[in-house]
Image (cartoon, rainbow, N blue to C red; front, top):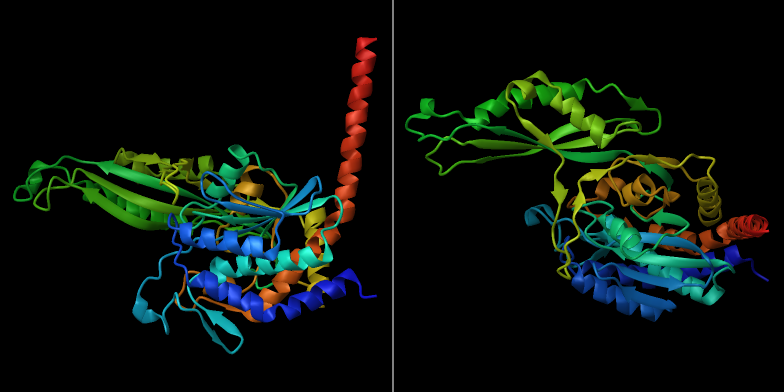
Length: 425
């Protein structure tokens, strides 16, 4: 009799053409942030076709499918929104007409992150055939709006829908490595206020853009002097990513100028520490500039507004954590080799699951980080197959851990009941 590992790997290989086809279908549906309705509906159809036990779309617009009936929940997440395509001339083919070439699939979202969703769908079919281990429910999530606000979807799922899984796997591209951390980020706005005047007599006003000029140079120098460094996540960074001004007209001196900063955070850095660093710059003080963290507030494709602050914490799950060990074990069985342990350079929904809520989180996904957001967006079909096998096999590695958690919870409940009985005697 074949082992569960052999059965899962065989079924994943047999599904090679199918998983490639699923990804092509997903790429064909444009789904920029806030415009995911079409691809969510297609995923709903696919989830039911693959045999999920329950499928629902929450009020915000995330789609959640489950298989299994256990009390311990493994959530596997793929955000299904993408960035814009940018300059179409930079693409070799239509970004929404998936091209298969030399074992790769090309198109917008192939790497970031519809490849992860395609693999999750094949994993569902595999689990439907081999069965979900006793005591575990696998929760597959197609999340929205991640590109515009990482983790917003999971803040909604946890705070409003009261989903709180025991473990989370993020399927952002890892090159089939096991990722267990990432730098965080915070968006900061620095605003200078001047006095408007006619551009024919600029000396009668105070130009807010000129007030911003020394601040720009100070921020650039500040970025080169960041000292805090983590041996796993590296150093933080800072970049000015947008500058805008306000004036009564193009013939007037602007009375306001705002610089938008992207501040990447290493371990030990927070929104508060990053904000104070900018506030304390002499040039910021001299201009009496305001320094704030903006909110993200945009309606989902369902018209629901869920406002969150643009702070996305860094996080690390220690290498000796049971979930990291389980991920390594599952990857070994699927890849027939020792997986790399890595961190993402960019941000993921892990900023919420692990960063804000402390839910053990790892990453394992098809394709490579370097192709994300680029006109070379692509995913190898071999990766889709291996990722599907990983998502199907991981619940089996987690089963004994789930049993132990259930025993501990039962023991704690019995102890609490005994204490209550003693208190009433």
